[in-house]
Every structure is written in structure tokens, then in C-alpha cells.
Length: 296
Image 1 (cartoon, rainbow, N blue to C red):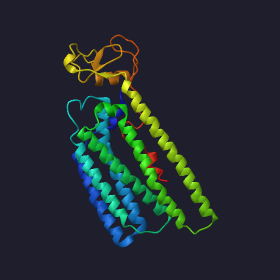
Image 2 (cartoon, rainbow, N blue to C red; image 1 turned 45 degrees about the horizontal axis):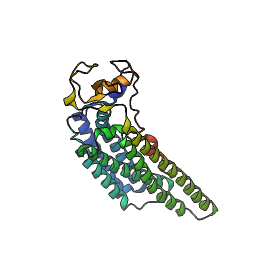
Image 3 (cartoon, rainbow, N blue to C red; image 1 turned 90 degrees about the vertical axis):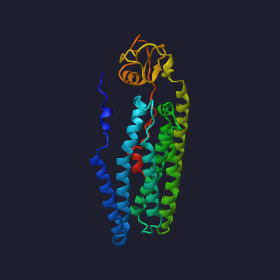
Image 4 (cartoon, rainbow, N blue to C red; image 1 turned 90 degrees about the horizontal axis):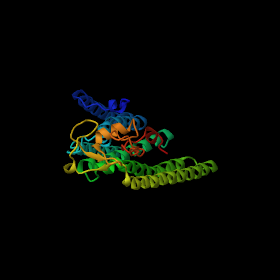
């Protein structure tokens, strides 16, 4: 059986990590203050961009760890992720902070400034989406079964669609700020056509994700009432934790079954054919780096 290397990507936060976060926050705040008062424009917006990007990448690892435990283990079978509410509040705070810093910004209309303005706008939207995701995890408005079926994959696609709507006016305003000419009209027209085509592709992908989500209701792994279980799990030989029934009728722990089906397509008891539920793309709620970079 192959080792699950993905688990090595998740490490508990240490006290040193917390101090590093605090130091990064205060150091960057000082740089932002200096840039606002003395250097302005390029340094101001690029510093904001760097700070919020670093925060977004560092903080999302904690949410990913929680979702990873839901998708692949029974860690939250008898409890809910209490820390998610603190991440939700923190992410909401930084989303509002980035919006406030950018709201009154009046800089030069250059491609560089426009791109980083679009980048910051994207981070604001993604931070808000992450805040909503963390709140949903904490409140248990969405169940573990819904998460495993790919609900967060739909949330990611919806966020990307909303982000695309916000990108269009940013770039059309930049194109209009350029000296008027036939080339400007052509560039604006071409940009709008490409944007509408890409937006249509995003909506189509969202529709397919909804179909996959609905189809996954009839999944192979069915939940079983623990009170009706008499036998032990055939894999770990212990009382089943979050018992799951396979199509053949045999019952095992969800955690054991998930790990088993990653390397085998048969029931561990009777060897009949079993196919694990295929995870939807972005089912862990993570935003791919390409989405963060391509802000047009």
C-alpha cells in the first residue's frame, strides 16, 4: 500500500509561527504607513499586494487542514471545527482592511498599477469567500457529507465567476484612460469579447459542477447508524468510527475505507468491485495559483 504523502503537507501551527505572523503584520503595517506618507503609488500598492498575498497563502493552510480532515478522515465526526470561527473573523477583518486601503487610493493609471489593483480586488473577494467558508465549517450549516460531495468546489467556482465580474470594469476603465485612438477601441472591443467568452466558460463549468454535485447523492459510500453495528471494522479490527456501508453490504470505518480505496478498488472483506467516490476539482475549497495570478 502506498503512503499517503498528502498528509505531510499539513503541520500544526507552532508558537513560532504565531510570532512570525504577528511580526509580519506589524512590520508590513509600518511599511504601509511610510509608503502612504512618503513614497506613494507604486510602493504603496505593491506593498499592500505583497502583504495580503502572504497573509492569504499562510492563513489558508489552516482551513485546508480542517477540510482535509473532513474529506479524508473522521476527525470531526463527533465534534465541529471550533477554530474555524476565529479564522472567519480574521479573514473578514483583512478583507475589509484591504478594501479600506484601496478605496481612497488615487494613483497613476498605468498597467502596473491597474494590475495590482485588480490583484488586490481579487484577494478581497477570495478573503471574503474564505471567511464564508470558515463560517460554514464552524456553524455546520453544510454537513460533512455535503463537503465530501464537493460543495466547496461549487463555492470556489462561484467566487471565480463573481471575481470575473469585478475585473471587467477595472480593465475597461484603464483602456479608456489611454489616449483615444482606433487601437484603443479595438483593444477594448477585443478585451470585452475575450472576457465574455471566458465568463461563459466559467458559468458552464459551474453548471457541470452542480450536475456532479447532484449526481454524487447516489454515491457508493453510504452512512450507517452506529447503533445498528455489531461487528468490528475488518480493516482496523476495532469498533467502526463513522461506519460506512459498501455496495456489497460490508461495513467499515470511513477513515479506513477512504485510505483502502485510494490503493484498491475492491472490498477489503469479500473482494467485490468497489469504486470510491471521485472528488470534485477544488473540493477542498482551495484557489489554484493560476486564478490568483490571472487578474484580467
